[in-house]
Image 1 (cartoon, rainbow, N blue to C red):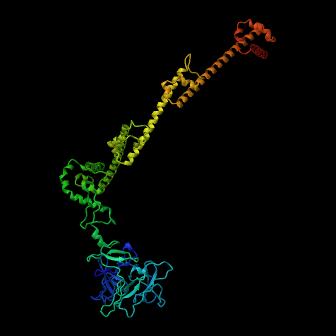
Image 2 (image 1 turned 45 degrees about the vertical axis):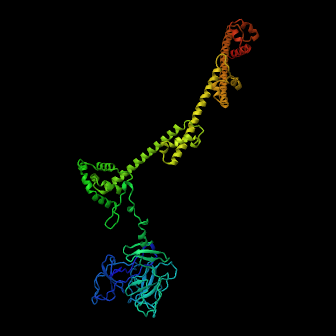
Image 3 (image 1 turned 180 degrees about the horizontal axis):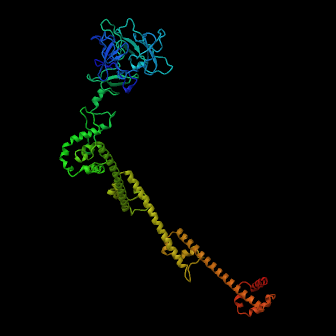
Length: 607
């Protein structure tokens, strides 16, 4: 609440230090003249409207209470009454007897305490001498007196009453906060202050005052005041703007030009961008930065003359026949034409493009901003793809350059350090080497090149070795064929080496590779010999089976014709068989004809 003289009677503590003490609390102006009813004081609400406050009953009113008149005017509604910084207490059930001097109130932490309306005494215990305690709104006191205590702890010491011989002004009482700090309260006016209100006059003995807890800063006209938290830390509060800070504002004013503070800097107050010479956010008449929408209006007004000179740009554009999509495309084409890229901010874009009448092809701020966001998003993706392609091209050119300059270097080289100094100098002076600006990426690419180069060289060597081994094998096959082969399956490796000692294909391979080729050739030769032999055996067996079948048929024919009896022995039949022409071709078989004769006789007997 503020008094009629503008001084603050109560004050909310700055959020920067919730436990810090409040400044001196000036009283609301008490006006007993001009017909004001006794006990009423005039005050001012936050919006400047006057109201009247009864220091005894705590009643507040919008209309002036006149002495001698019945106080029937409506009191200030609770929802509209000016609020105080301390906690308010709900009214309990009315007492059954006249209201006593002791009143019940509730602290900010919800705990109940008791307050004497006449003496200003407060205590945690319920007074036993009173029959009842009225539940009325508590008188404003410093919030530190009502600080919360843990359950089960003792309450703060009951503040002492005024001493008879004290120099304290009439109506003032002395109290102590739970931290032991002394303050003073006037129950009649409701004023609370830290400074001791002493009686004036030379006869008054000097009394030591408590340490000063707040002071005006070094600038006489400054609205800032200095305070201390219970732990001794200083902070500063401006009652006019309700701003609180830890640093000394006077020192900030001196150093702001050379060392601006970063605390509390807003995004809208950022430094101007360096792109396009920088765009400073416009400010209003009070020096406050404008938001984006207000800044657009500022730039539109600023660029009015420029738009008038470019009015012919809209002559051939019929907005009434254009769809929303076509208007958006036209707006984006304007952005592209004026050089807006993905790096431009919206503030810069508004200033640059609002000078072109085509900027208003989209009628509202929201549509223009939305189209800009989409445009920047697409431009960002395009720029990213372009950077990727450029980076890939620079990598490819670097690899081509290394292949060009290092083709004559030894295949054992694993890095540039393994190459000759002349080659290294040529490589480092090539523009394609410097095209890859990132040193880490360039070293990585060179390392990958040497790894790939080594792999390709191994592939070439492997192919050459395979070709030489195939040539030696062809020589061995040639010398092992024909009517009089030089080599056969029983020819040893040493014999082959002696015969081919001067053959180029033989000399192109080392000893292990020659041995591998010989082993494969020998294995194949042995397989071929085994195959020939197997076929010969099969042929002989087939011929033998045919001749046996023919012998059986001829023998059965002789038996059927009666030339040979079944009971005849082989040695008796042999002369008859030798007389037959076909017998000579069968008798030369390895199998004895006697055994064959016996088999035929047994088969005929079975039949």
